[in-house]
Image 1 (cartoon, rainbow, N blue to C red):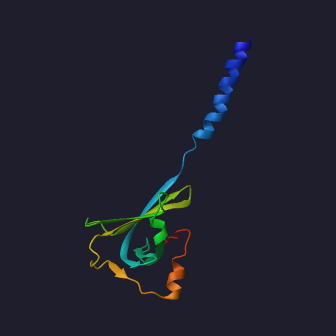
Image 2: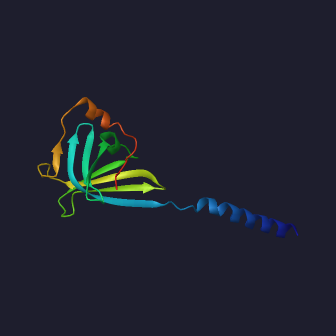
Image 3: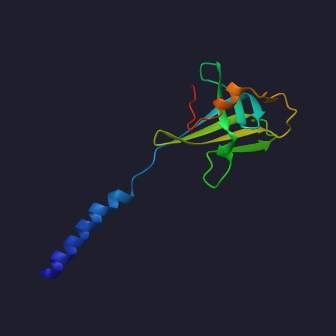
Length: 132
């Protein structure tokens, strides 16, 4: 009788604990075609196309590109699909962004931003707000 109670209690514990470890994450990835990438010492300003065929921009701070748990990455290449921006949200929260840009900084899709006090403040972001 004790064996049956023990076996039933073990089975119940496994059934109760298993759902706690099998929760799935909802991952949403969206690609945006880039109009132009502006480099600055504090980060990148990226102009991109929305689904309404309007242009929008987002500021990505340089601090996001460093560290093991970085929020941003830039991939340089000369693929015909470049330039574009890939943004990943996990469970509805921004996780990371990847910029795919031309490796030649003289390409027409590259630009440089000039230093202004209000521009520096725009790079002080903690989250990426995209316009769809």
